[in-house]
Image 1: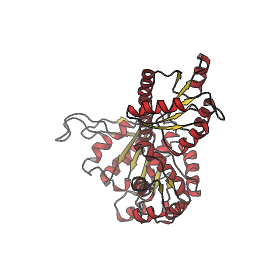
Image 2: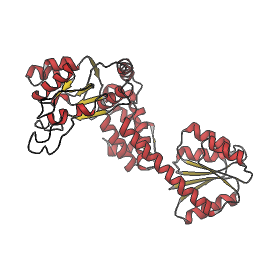
Image 3: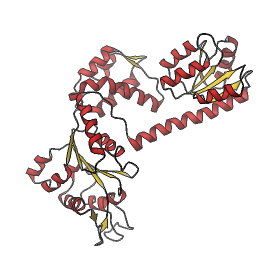
Image 4: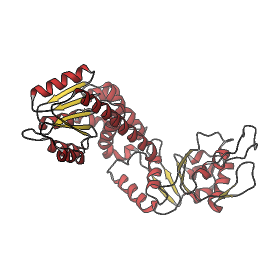
Length: 382
């Protein structure tokens, strides 16, 4: 737990630092608001104690600056001239709490405990949101602008979408964005990795089964199509699906109804299907491993996700995004990447695409020093 104390009174900041250090906290001090803001730009703090009455830049201005910077630290305001109105104004500006001088040790420790809970909750919420909603689509290159425009046009419709692209390019991210921007966004978003499910189980996984329909069917099971009713079903790696399962998927797309394995009863479903593949489906059709009629059903709209080598202009933005994300999730201190190091990353060939880039950024954060240098990139990447 890292704490920053911003106070122009040396005796207060030093005594508070000593008390909190004795409690086992890692504590830094700043003698004014300007220095405090500068330190927050370079270092991530969980809790910040900030005096209100200070020369040059008072506590209220510091709060405003923190808001502009988008920091999510718990900020506790302290003042010897406080009243109810001041406390309310601090909370409105985003402060976690307000404490009057002279400072009471028990009150401070209770506030820190509560602030720790809040910081932990914020981190958990961020991680959960990423799991539920996925990551933002980072990039301002021409291919990425085109994809975002396509998503905006297509999301409002129920048109089926086929997303094509190499492994690690972010096809699943495109699918999630389509769902989020659609009228179905409040309904389920269900993913199926067709390559990860054995061919003998894919029909049960997609369409469900009745109790006793096969040896291990000990109870009724709703398939992914039923689970996604009203929402979006994302069929990832559709090119690896068996021909038998393809025939059943085609029926659902045509008739909007299915029957579970071991049942003759039809179940009506309202599902938008988005599919993705890293294979050339036209070649698979020629080889007889993919149904042409299913291809035409799925490919009403085709979105081609470029490789990272085709959008190198986005690499600096992606690197900065991954640094912030990884440091936020792991508690690591963010590092600056020197221009020569970034140039090496941009010039590298990324056969593993964005997935490889994220792994490389995490490796550099773990193994590098205070800054990520060109020597670090050469040692740990090339």
